[in-house]
Amino acid sequence: MSKVVNLNKFRKQKAKQARVKQADTNRRLHGRSKAERAQDALQKKKLESSVDQARLEHSPKSDDEGTTPPTPPTPPKEES
Image (tube, one colour):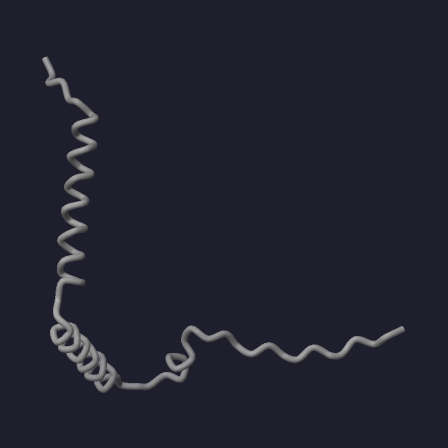
C-alpha cells in the first residue's frame, strides 16, 4: 500500500523552508556594517569599470539605453 501524506503539513513545511531561505538572504543583504556595504559597492564599481575598459568598441547605442527618442513637435491647430 502507498503511504498516506498529509498535504496540509507538506504545504506548511514547504512554506517554512521558503521563509527560512528568505530570512537567510535578508541577513546577508541587510545584516552588514556600513563599511562592508561600502567595500562591496567599491568592488562592484571596479569590476564594472574593468569590464567597460575591456570592450573592443564603444557603441553609441549603449549610451542611450533606457531613454526614449524625442518626439517631433506637433503643429499648432488652426482655428476655423
